[in-house]
Amino acid sequence: MRLRNRYLSCALVLTAVSGVGCGSDPADPVVAVCLKAAQEKLNDPHAQIDEESMRAAVTKKADGTWEVGGDVWFERGMQGERKQTIACHARASDNGKGEPQVTLLQFLW
Image (cartoon, rainbow, N blue to C red; front, side, top):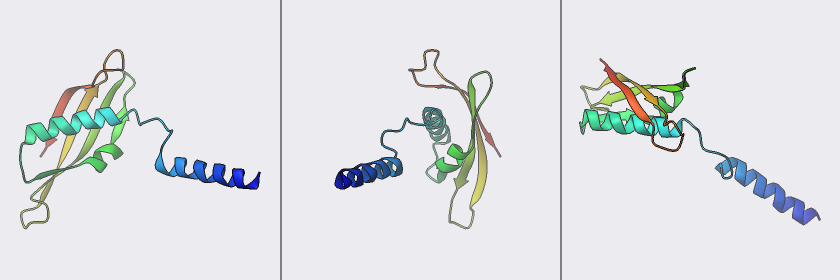
Protein backbone atom coordinates (compact mmCIF):
# COMPACT_ATOMS: atom_id res chain seq x y z
CA MET A 1 0.00 0.00 0.00
CA ARG A 2 2.79 2.45 0.85
CA LEU A 3 4.54 1.77 -2.44
CA ARG A 4 1.32 2.44 -4.34
CA ASN A 5 0.79 5.76 -2.50
CA ARG A 6 4.38 6.77 -3.23
CA TYR A 7 3.88 6.15 -6.96
CA LEU A 8 0.58 7.99 -6.91
CA SER A 9 2.16 10.98 -5.14
CA CYS A 10 5.01 11.00 -7.63
CA ALA A 11 2.58 10.89 -10.57
CA LEU A 12 0.56 13.79 -9.14
CA VAL A 13 3.67 15.92 -8.63
CA LEU A 14 4.93 15.21 -12.15
CA THR A 15 1.55 16.05 -13.60
CA ALA A 16 1.39 19.33 -11.70
CA VAL A 17 4.92 20.34 -12.65
CA SER A 18 4.63 19.42 -16.32
CA GLY A 19 1.14 20.79 -16.81
CA VAL A 20 -0.03 17.48 -18.25
CA GLY A 21 -3.68 16.94 -17.62
CA CYS A 22 -4.40 20.63 -17.24
CA GLY A 23 -6.36 22.60 -19.80
CA SER A 24 -4.51 25.06 -21.98
CA ASP A 25 -4.78 28.77 -21.34
CA PRO A 26 -7.71 30.24 -23.33
CA ALA A 27 -5.47 33.20 -24.22
CA ASP A 28 -2.92 30.98 -26.03
CA PRO A 29 -4.65 31.09 -29.46
CA VAL A 30 -5.12 34.85 -29.15
CA VAL A 31 -1.44 35.44 -28.36
CA ALA A 32 -0.45 33.11 -31.21
CA VAL A 33 -2.60 34.89 -33.81
CA CYS A 34 -1.39 38.33 -32.64
CA LEU A 35 2.24 37.17 -32.71
CA LYS A 36 1.82 35.79 -36.22
CA ALA A 37 0.13 38.97 -37.47
CA ALA A 38 2.88 41.14 -35.97
CA GLN A 39 5.65 39.03 -37.51
CA GLU A 40 4.00 39.19 -40.92
CA LYS A 41 3.48 42.95 -40.69
CA LEU A 42 7.03 43.70 -39.53
CA ASN A 43 8.80 41.39 -41.97
CA ASP A 44 12.11 42.62 -40.48
CA PRO A 45 14.98 40.22 -39.70
CA HIS A 46 16.24 42.64 -37.02
CA ALA A 47 12.93 42.69 -35.13
CA GLN A 48 12.31 40.39 -32.17
CA ILE A 49 8.85 40.18 -30.66
CA ASP A 50 8.88 39.37 -26.96
CA GLU A 51 6.26 36.63 -26.69
CA GLU A 52 6.56 36.47 -22.89
CA SER A 53 5.66 40.16 -22.59
CA MET A 54 2.63 39.47 -24.79
CA ARG A 55 1.50 36.59 -22.56
CA ALA A 56 1.88 38.82 -19.52
CA ALA A 57 -0.28 41.56 -21.07
CA VAL A 58 -3.41 39.70 -22.16
CA THR A 59 -6.83 40.85 -21.00
CA LYS A 60 -10.29 39.65 -21.93
CA LYS A 61 -12.83 42.44 -22.28
CA ALA A 62 -16.46 42.25 -21.19
CA ASP A 63 -17.61 42.05 -24.82
CA GLY A 64 -15.54 38.88 -25.36
CA THR A 65 -12.72 40.48 -27.31
CA TRP A 66 -9.09 40.24 -26.21
CA GLU A 67 -6.37 42.87 -25.89
CA VAL A 68 -2.72 41.88 -26.11
CA GLY A 69 0.25 44.15 -25.56
CA GLY A 70 3.95 43.47 -25.76
CA ASP A 71 7.42 44.61 -26.68
CA VAL A 72 9.17 44.59 -30.03
CA TRP A 73 12.94 44.95 -30.09
CA PHE A 74 14.87 46.17 -33.11
CA GLU A 75 18.59 45.46 -33.49
CA ARG A 76 18.63 43.90 -30.03
CA GLY A 77 22.11 43.73 -28.52
CA MET A 78 23.50 46.20 -31.03
CA GLN A 79 24.41 49.85 -30.61
CA GLY A 80 21.19 51.00 -32.32
CA GLU A 81 18.95 48.85 -30.09
CA ARG A 82 15.47 50.24 -29.58
CA LYS A 83 12.20 48.98 -28.14
CA GLN A 84 8.67 49.63 -29.34
CA THR A 85 5.30 48.50 -28.11
CA ILE A 86 2.70 46.44 -29.92
CA ALA A 87 -1.07 46.52 -29.34
CA CYS A 88 -3.30 43.80 -30.75
CA HIS A 89 -7.04 43.26 -30.40
CA ALA A 90 -8.62 39.99 -31.40
CA ARG A 91 -12.05 38.41 -31.45
CA ALA A 92 -12.59 34.72 -30.83
CA SER A 93 -14.60 32.76 -33.36
CA ASP A 94 -18.34 32.57 -32.76
CA ASN A 95 -18.30 28.86 -31.97
CA GLY A 96 -14.98 28.99 -30.10
CA LYS A 97 -13.43 26.36 -32.39
CA GLY A 98 -11.90 28.48 -35.14
CA GLU A 99 -8.84 30.69 -35.06
CA PRO A 100 -9.32 34.12 -33.45
CA GLN A 101 -9.42 37.08 -35.82
CA VAL A 102 -7.19 40.13 -35.36
CA THR A 103 -9.31 43.29 -35.39
CA LEU A 104 -6.50 45.78 -34.61
CA LEU A 105 -2.73 45.62 -34.90
CA GLN A 106 -0.84 48.73 -33.94
CA PHE A 107 2.83 49.50 -33.42
CA LEU A 108 3.33 52.31 -30.93
CA TRP A 109 6.47 54.14 -31.90
